[in-house]
Length: 220
Image (cartoon, rainbow, N blue to C red; front, side, top):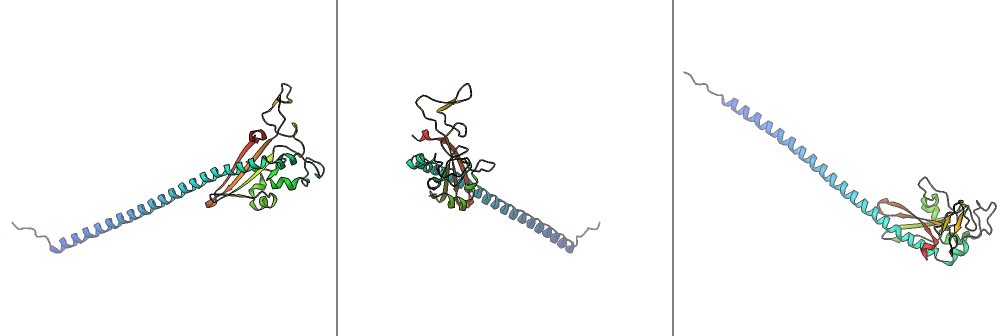
């Protein structure tokens, strides 16, 4: 009985084919590992960026309170209460005039005695352009923790002049009667509501708008 002999060259060729196959598999695995590492790094970078942006945004929102406090300071000044009802120098009709004599005092307080034009979200248009706002209102800006803070006070009235129930939003001290008229509560004086809008510009182009409706009595 003869014995089958395996050609040494065949063994060598098979071994070489196995080596080539293993090398190809290893290369594929390495490529997949590299792609996975890159994807993981990008995921970590994105997470860090998002976390940082959220932190900056939160700081921007918190800083807006400084603008509100500054607005309260202005509202407590005598110049605020003595000039807001003025119609002197306002060209007719009083409800739409813009060149009133007292305007020089209003802009020093970042105040306007009637509501200004707003966008669809209720943000005063003038406050959305920093250059326009800074040129018009002269109370200056605040710098808090690297954030720029601008604020605007508007009296919730449709026109200039004394606060009137027909053209102004009144505070809670004035309540509607059964006939729909606004009645002054005992011992109180009718007072309008004010809208305070604060814009905060922070790092990484973060921008925040915050609004409050306040009455003058809440400051006392």
